[in-house]
Picture (cartoon, rainbow, N blue to C red):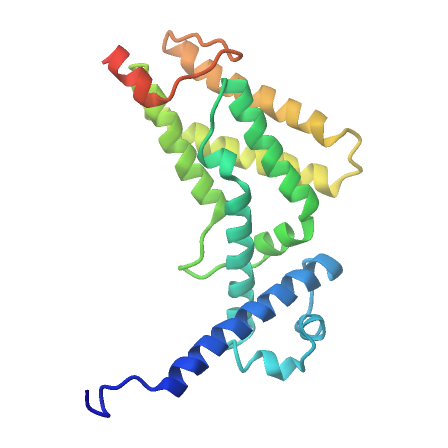
Length: 225
């Protein structure tokens, strides 16, 4: 291997150190947001990281680059936490309740991080949690509608409508005086979501017991084919 093609060890080490430092600064930013709220300043992030403000920008192009790195990390955390949303199991009511409760629990425990995510726009490569959930639910609902020999077209409207409903109701609850508990909110949201789904199914002549296990689509499709 010639000198021209041999990897530069120093460059490789610097790249690895650069990424580690970026990760450390993002972790410090998450801690600063949790302490100071979604309007956290770069100075507060730098203070939490134990460095001068100018030091941050040796690892981030500008404030926008730092914001996007933070937002991507928050999105990753939410995605990991929402496992029950990606892989629902049980009865319809259990699926809905678990998904809503998991979502609300994360938002309640990390309200500042959630606010930061919603207030800062992401670049084109960063995941959009609301869209990701909407797309996933569209496929999920569409699969069952198809299995029940119903038109899957309403799936997207239901999915994104439910995402918007849950988000708006949750924001109102987080910003308000919280006159009722999280469990009460979960029950209210779950009941409304089931009403939406049940209405669509009944319109197509399908009646489901919300308290009986709902088999996976793969188990239903052969029966209704």
